[in-house]
Length: 370
Ligand code: FNR
Image (cartoon, rainbow, N blue to C red):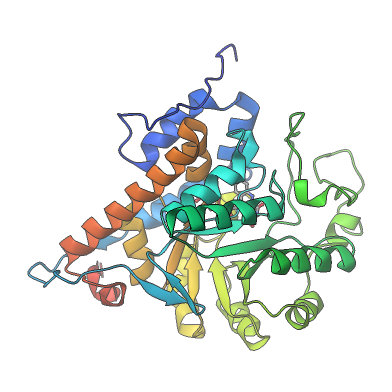
């Protein structure tokens, strides 16, 4: 309290050399209650801390002398070319961090050829975000995949409208988030920040009041996504369908059997249920159980984290909070710089480990403590 919020800088702050640097700097650029909302994890925040600890617990085992003359980080994911395996995770209400919000993020993602997943709860409409992506693609002759993250709405008709709007606007995959419908949130959006996609839809009930009726039987639980909705959704979109928020290996198998094209192994950055496993811990078991592309988020902050996730079976990773930190510090330039830092760290780690391509990153780069 009392600290004035500084506007974003118009250039990249000179002293910033890593994603944690952006996090530290961002505090001065974000209003206190929004900062708490962005940074926080559920309850005691054990999972939030554990997400980082799981990365830190792994040790890398370098093998120098590799020929890196033709090294690259390219791959094809769901039939879409990807220059490097780093995407922007869906993050709601980005105008909390910067007036340009998602428009700045998608410009940065396109410029850095990173994938961007636009949230249902974006503060600019999905059409405006897609338009900005198109504009940047033609100006820079560069592109990255653009996917739409779907939250189920109370009425299926409204869910379907979102899917159809995303298809019409040129989004290239639907990311259906299944882990976050039933969660507490005490954060009230400031004036002027809203879910631009949902202006015409009645707001979902929030589980913010501890004085309210018992949870079971309330609309909140009744609206949570279910298996029958997955089958319905699969039948109603021609786009690749990705499910986000998967942690259970047997459920991963069931999802793939039900026609899902890829999975995002995630605990929502430790924001939903405290005490759950970290995505990195369960990744090997899920990679054994299914043979579709696996993406991972929750705690990725360094190039070495990307390498560790890929070594255990991920095809790509997503970053959540760091995009808000970078946005708040320096708008779209900040997000572009943040992506550049992470990618540079990844390439440095690959070179030092002796990996010329992503395919060379396997369990062999990890030291197994017995
Ligand atoms: C999120 N996340 C999220 N996920 C989603 O599917 N739809 C959404 O609208 C949001 N909104 C959102 C807002 C904020 C403020 C945060 C921090 C996160 C979760 C996000 O996609 C991702 O899973 C986590 O942020 C990943 O963890 P890290 O990178 O933040 O540690």
